[in-house]
Length: 248
Image (tube, helix red, strand yellow):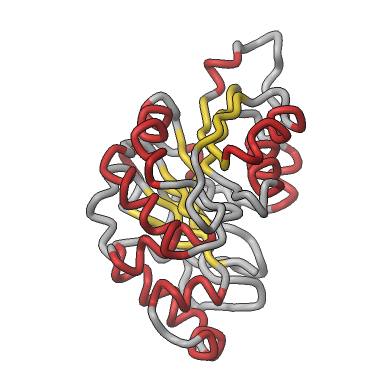
């Protein structure tokens, strides 16, 4: 039996009852995000994880933003690390981030990163130690340009990119992406071994890792196989290797 994942469905899911569960039983998320000039992205990501019911959130961010972020998101434990010249996290933080990821059920990397090179270097430095589900967001996807098969990532992976970021990954002009976004996403999916499920009128379909296909307005005749939609609740053994999501 399949269930379409829609905005109405997500809004209808209640948060876990505090009386029925303890925070450790609701999962631990690691958010690796923000830079000296974009600290708010780490706040948005951490709060999103908490709002969907995650029990514990840990944040790895630029040292210059850590204290303020810890005050803005008091529910999270915030770790500040040395910064690269761009203000992004330095690769010197890789060992500690890897240790934090080892104790997390899922890891998000990339919101608010400003330099593609620094972002790719950091992901490359931690990739082999990430064993659980990973989401590479925004400029963290630059790592995929140099490692299209995602061979160093041992767990399932979600890529969330907009047209300019997808152009960076595929090393093409943004106009080529915008001319045929569905073909561009398919190209990335084939290179990375991602499942190719597509949305219908903005509804999301899932398989192993949440995969929403293309960005708004793009349509595809392909339909997900039976049992795919709603598979955020399926066991990990049912998931494919990687997923690709494109957004605005």
